[in-house]
Image (tube, one colour):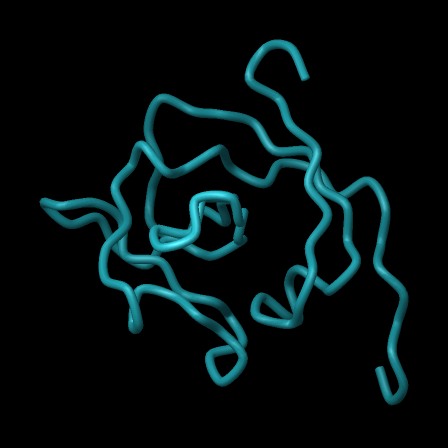
Length: 104
């Protein structure tokens, strides 16, 4: 999308309950990111894969990112800090909710 905007569909439970499996979000690139921002980024070991995580802290070598649903998240605890160049943008607006699963 023009102007640094992208649309992403979340697949998987790693950010539940804040960001649900199946949600569609508008993502906007930013000049800088802060702790607590929820961002879409390229997986450091699989650059073809976009993942959604929360920035926990900023480090000298990049951003430390984690999923809100820690047991279901592949994040900086496994691959370390992520270079800022891999961040696509901040999740700005959910425009379609994913389906609610059983018991939710």
